[in-house]
View (cartoon, one colour):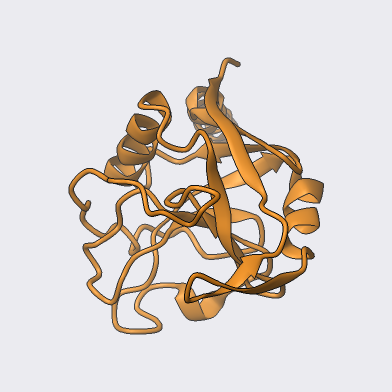
Amino acid sequence: MILASTLHLAGIASAQQASAPRVKLHTSAGDIVVELAPDKAPKTVDNFLQYVRDKHYDGTVFHRVIDGFMIQGGGFTPELQQKPTRAPIPLEANNGLKNDKYTIAMARTPNPNSATSQFFINVKDNAMLNAPNPDGYGYTVFGKVVAGSEVVDKIRAVRTGNKNGMQDVPVESVTILSATPVAK
């Protein structure tokens, strides 16, 4: 009986993983595939997928790269012009997912309910971003890199500087050429 229950639960977990949406970020540094977690962060995943469907990420850059921390993108053109966004979404940081290496999370302002299009990929375990840290709220993790971790590592190691009043900007742009759903 216990074995049958265990196998049944394993089958459910496997089916949930099989149905988890994936998105390929085709970048100038190579491809990154992220698997999303709609069961843990449904509003965040819906928001991200809508930006993918709208082609919002196509032609944006990783505008903030801090080796030993994260790579951030999804909001700026190569000229560092911020793209218009939809309304912010509510925070879903208290969902059990952690800001571990190669997870994808939403960027936000000090307002916990301010995430729009910008996201970041953790390049190390960043426990200090897990709810309720660092400010009582945390940062919403909504998926993980399942292919292209070497591309993430390549991006995190690029040379950065200051540009247009922003810090940690890659000296040579790393562009998201396209973001597309991946069929399983």
